[in-house]
Image 1 (cartoon, rainbow, N blue to C red):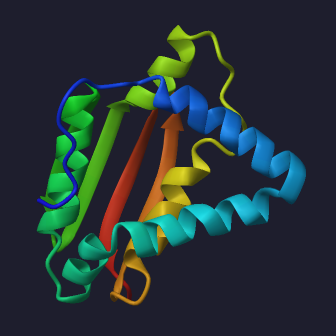
Image 2 (image 1 turned 90 degrees about the vertical axis):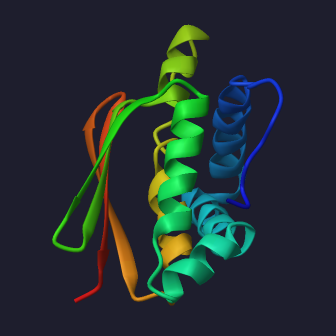
Amino acid sequence: MRYQETGAVHKDFHGVVNCTIEYICKNFGKNTMHEIFFKTGRDVYKDIREHLAKGDSSELENFWIYFLDREDGEFDMEKNNGEIKLIVKKCPAMEHLKMLEIEPHPEFCSQTEYMNKGLCHGTGFEIKTVKTGKFSCVQTLRRKS
């Protein structure tokens, strides 16, 4: 897998992301924030997108597993009828913000939604994200109909 980090985990990154989201939304609007997340998914994680375009979801699956394991997230993954569901029971980012006593910006979780849109752009796949609680969601990868 191309996207791996080694060394110490610095979860305070999530606090910085929250502050950055607040700044960009306040000064440029939430549409600009959405565009940044979309472009990050599309361009920064280009290798995942290229694998999806070839019908190969393994890079995305490995990416999800690697980072959720690395940050002590609680999750399951289910594969049924060509769909892959990532069931996040405890989001490490949201848990860390809670520990820091930082209220997540209302657009904090949109990073997942819009990065996923970027990851899937032009691939024939889509990822639907449903928030199931303050610290949980289900992300479903499927082929577009």
